[in-house]
Amino acid sequence: MFEKRVRHLKRYREIAAAFSRNGFGFIVKDLGLHDLVSLPKRLSMKDKKEGTHSTGERIRKFLEELGPTFVKMGQLASTRPDLIPTDIIRELTKLQDEVPPFSSEEVYEIIESELGSSMSELFREFHSEPLGSASIGQVHEALLHTGERVAVKVQRPHINQLVHTDLEILHELVEIADHRLGWAAKYRLKEVVEEFSQALIAELDYRREGRNGERIARQFEGDHTVHIPCVYWDYTTKKVLTMEFVEGVKLNHLEALREHGYDTKLLAERVTRSILQQILLEGFFHGDPHPGNIYALHDNVVAFMDFGMVGRLTSEMKQHFATLMIAMMRQRTDGVIKAITEMGIVPDHIDMEELRADVEELRDEYYDVPFSQIHLGEAVHKLFRIAHAHRIQIPTNLTLVGKALLTLEGMIEKLDPELSIVKVAEPFGRELLKQRYHPKQMAEQVYDQWQDFRKAMSNIPQNVEQLTSITKKGHIPIEVTMPKLDMFLKKMDRISNRLSFSIVLLSFSIIMVGLIIGSALGGQASLLWNVPAVEIGFIVAILMFVWLLFSIFRSGRF
Image 1 (cartoon, one colour):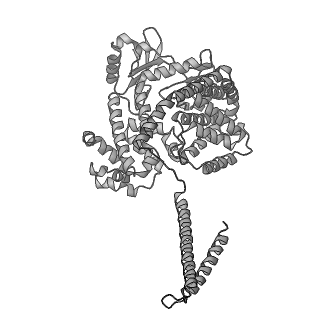
Image 2 (cartoon, rainbow, N blue to C red):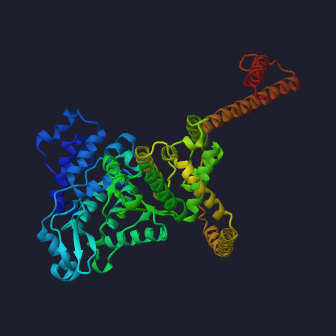
């Protein structure tokens, strides 16, 4: 690890300086980076003077200062409202992904290198001025020799190397944080960074984005109200993506929509229906359906763009999500808890009573509110936050559903405030229930359960053999879990003390009986070292007996 730090020393200095400039100098110290890099005194004192900006603003500025990798990580983090506080999420959604474009010479060089032909052979026309420039790449308009207008996305030079270097450093920092900072392990920082890293690396392969687009396009074959741009695979590689050019108005440009005569109510209904179809029926959906990625075309056709981030739901996940929706609709606390615990990984020491109290508090918030008037994305988001508070690990793709619904609601409120997402979702819910109880689906479930049972039965001989072998060696691991151990030990201590006291009392009584009998048989005076032992012992025994009876009755456990 030390060799890696030395190799990336310059980048470490930039990260440490960015931490300090944005009021997080204490992190540099906690991670031990001050031993590796030396910062000017004005930077090391910076965080002591910081107070004009909120934590969320400072995090956003920190990410923007460090460039593409950190900006994309911030954007990915904004999809996890179950892990990150709302005020920080709000700032992360403001992250600017627009950076200065790289030169046309570099664009031509990358395209020719990737596609193996000269620009003149590939395109009849190519606009050197980009339509947009982002952290990973930029988009140019072009015209093929066959006459089709296309949008060509070209990956930024050396971005692959930069991203992998930054991710390597991030993993090193998280490894340090996991050992030094208690909150890093508490919030599963290592797992989160690994998850975001995989998503970011996937975005570096434009072929994956093209395949994602085609898969969603197949969902809407025959539906003329939704359009997905086609991919020109002969002009597409890992670093170059060529797609059909789409000319329309982004849904976040409300004034332009009205000026061009678009029906915003119809657009809202079509966007909602198309996203719910992707999530509830297909289980493969656009992971970032914000208004900038959705266009309104002629005749109020809705077009989706940018498929770098997608969500995937298994049939089991869809069923769990449908169960959650039904439980929320019926306001059944037990049903909500069951759905949450079945869809996530539940820790061993979860306090079910506290979980129930939190869910009931959320239920009370929506009590007597018609389900059609409930903000579905907001309610799901709050439920997932409750799950996270109790350390229930909800699968990323399900949290992505919550974020997509939350984004959808924000968009619909501007396009058509009267539209109820729940009402649009009703037919999809009915279709999902039909699928659940369809004979073919039930037969597949029975078959899967039988396979699991058969596998478990076939493993029994092997497991018994392993257990026998371990037993013969005398190595049987035993794990004892004792909730409320301190209270239990205190009770055991009191019991043992009382038992000891009783034994002492019994022993004392036996001794006294022995002395009395001995005195009676020998006809001698009951004096021991000139002390009337029997008389005194008798009195002490009576007092101890009375005290013991009083203690038992007072405890209420006679």
